[in-house]
Length: 402
Image (spheres, rainbow, N blue to C red):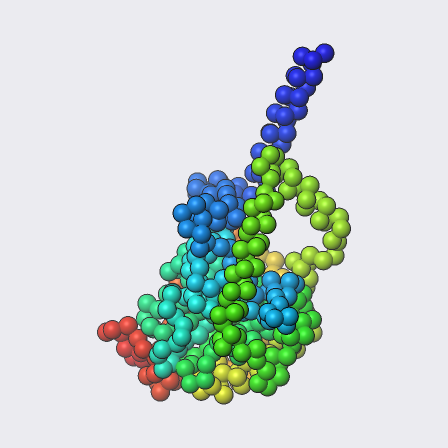
């Protein structure tokens, strides 16, 4: 009888190990399968495991803590809510894995993906990029995002992109981090994939963010950067430690699957990915763009709207309801007398547009895609206002306008 019991236990354990391994591979999703199909090496670790591995040598590694985190989990400083706009400041960040590798980059002194020493700003005029994960440079390594490519020509470029940002968070970022008298251009990168959805799912319901539509409202974040940085870092450290302490060692994928089933059962109807933005959010978007334009112009800068297409538009897939509002978005922005850089034509002219996305799948852009976007913005700057361009420092031997 004992022998039979042992055989049953061994058989059950082996079955669970096999099930856990299978679930682990399924959890990697279609990206892993596509990488295998194309012969691309794929790092099967999750993001937190990569952070833990880096931390064995240097504790200053984190996952990015996007600003939207603090909409759902308000951050209190001295008992009062503060909405940070950057991630963990002065830290190494592990990003996403869409092409087989986990991207890595550094955050600057305000928690944005720029080189150390970016703040305080020193030059007379800067080019600022504002947007979401496409602007941040999701899933590519430091040196390959849009701002990094622009810096190869223009020295003073500041990337204010942040994963998960929507239009109200982007307006807040301009108000807080684009200083008067130090801005030549602000490029507002609008994502047709999710900006309207972000408004509906989170931002339009947040009373603090809505206040940025008021003329002059500010949290004075730069003046409070030290205490904000400390609070964000403490939050991020707590989350990492909590994840490490709760990380399953035995049958981790089985346990994760059970957790997900429980979450789906008791959180039906709360998944933000199911939210669809519509024309109601389009009206709010245009209001935000109008306020952002006024904000930048009041600081002696030029505001430019950049339309960023998703993979389905360039690759012939079924476009989201938000993407189908493209013409209305562009017409509405043009009616506000805002210059527009439409990335659809130049990216569509690429001989193989799908190659601009990791593994030719839905996601962010590859280094080549980000390089093309930077080149398009550079072309716009070369044909822009000469007086404004003279205030932007360029790489030695490369004229600002020609």
